[in-house]
Image (tube, rainbow, N blue to C red; front, side):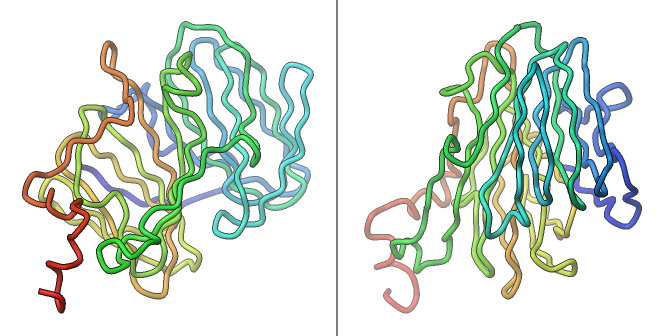
Length: 267
């Protein structure tokens, strides 16, 4: 597990968090945060890599292959997402209409396919933990933009989790063979939480990034602070992430229908 935060050194333009040409940290991906001001234009055209562009916050015009989408998302806590997935050799032009922040994820993919804009009406959304499971301690909203089910042509998976204040997500602890990247956002710049991975604990903060290469993992947001994080996975060759989840046997009982009966003060 590796965690780092570049929030204090972010600048306008593209900020690389993981550069596969230098060290992909086992992810097989490039990860970055693009900051734009009104009137800025940024172009992406990768000869060998597919690209996902997720609007965290702002107002941006997406253009590619003669298509244009106007995306408006004031923040990732109250508004629905826009995420573009495009194959190699696609020219993507992003034009900011206001201050905007975008998460960018890339990996090598030799397949050619039609680019897809996952607009709010196309995003898979699940609400979990809202029926009193584990005494209400793991309420969260899970968005999946693309995965093996709806984008089998991609080598990546990308989604978002809205972790409510004081609640847990990626819980109960689990793992999967495929490395995973978490990129964190908080509704307040001083917001924080904690991540647990492979027996280690790390403090999470706004615009922080974690790489989970192996081991059981889970996380929580501090009371008073909502946490929204992008979660990205690169399929392993011959072993794609197919909603793969291997639960920690020590905590498997938490999945039982009567788990609340065995949690204080009920036991």
